Image (tube, rainbow, N blue to C red; front, top):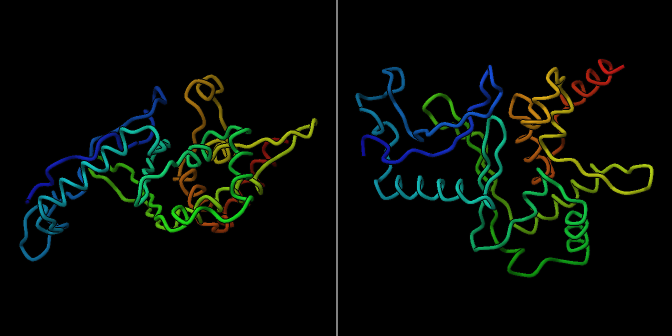
Length: 232
């Protein structure tokens, strides 16, 4: 097909500069509207050809995941959709963004009790991160690993990132909240109404570190030091 038949729906496109509310776009996964994007005289999507069945299947699968609250997380400038090769609950994913202490403790205890069931360990886990660039969908990240490994890495993330209050209770913070703490918020009312905001795909980067056990980028240390100095 010369034109991608379905758009990917609900792709985050940052926030409105005036209202600070989140914006979403419906985007083409394959788009060639400038001569500089074309090669060998090919027109439109023929520059990155896929069959009609594959194009329809890709868009329908993404849109289904985007509409299912249990299968995606939305940040200001990116949506992460995730799935497994065989159906399996992925509630631990939403704990990364909105951690509930009791549920986090249950996750840690379940992982620490021993190896996951054979089916979970062998099941494939997939994550796709997509943002919008005007009318185009931009693939920002793709993760593929075993589901058991993803759960173990998430458990380790919570254990290393937790804080304790004066009463000795554990506190956990979501990805957007952690990323937002590195930046200044001039409008406290908007912060309370619309939630944390920070640029540069940072929450999604933290998600990759949490799920793959990757080290945090050194640049985050500089941001944290600058934020601490500014708060003095």
